[in-house]
Image (cartoon, rainbow, N blue to C red):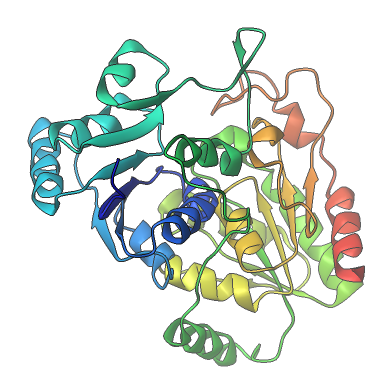
Length: 343
């Protein structure tokens, strides 16, 4: 089969999963350096991946109505892609490349419909007939291996640009923190309430990190009302001075703030993976999610979990007392920060 001239990569929707897909982009580029490599994903992911040296373009996904799907399929058809690397599992993400008649379409097939929509199907990872969690980096690499693409390393890649660096520097300078050593704190999560460490725990950890290491907590929510409310509560409960980004920007700003930090403290959510990609030490508090999905590149990470019988449950909302997060003491985060900062 001839080498592909145009390759489409359908990205996953979660922010962290997009970051964990960057080794896949690198592997495709190294295997096919002359091919045009285009990513397709949610509009705000374009800023996240801007500057990625392996990409030649980005196609935004807007709308889920049938006419939106048909419109995107026509665009894909007109672009003349040879391959579609479909990283998410949903039938809809495989439907558009099928409608576009892309000759080779690779992805996982957990049901008959997906198996029909892709030409190179993979069964989800299993052991003894049961599905198992797998590092997302490895999970995506299995798709490209099916296409004959060798791995190109597990490292995550993001690029920060000078205008965003200057914006963050100006923001800090205006608040008298131009030279401050920062602990970036991301207390939100898009998955659901079960992923959220209680605001009072975040506040106590911020206080301990500020007193022990001299880092100024910088609380950065996503640009939505729910996360902003959580961030304000953390700032209100903290006893030590902290900075609150009360008008959060886009993902370009997030990258620049993370790059500026000496330490990141967060739930198991997107900023964790941004921190790993940018080489920042990160303390992650984890409750309902399976750690095997992100069991990689742990040298500069500390992933804290509470040993309760119901975790990981994978539920967006805890049906009982949220013990996996409520019992995870702030002192553990402070000690984890000490380990990382000492290193």
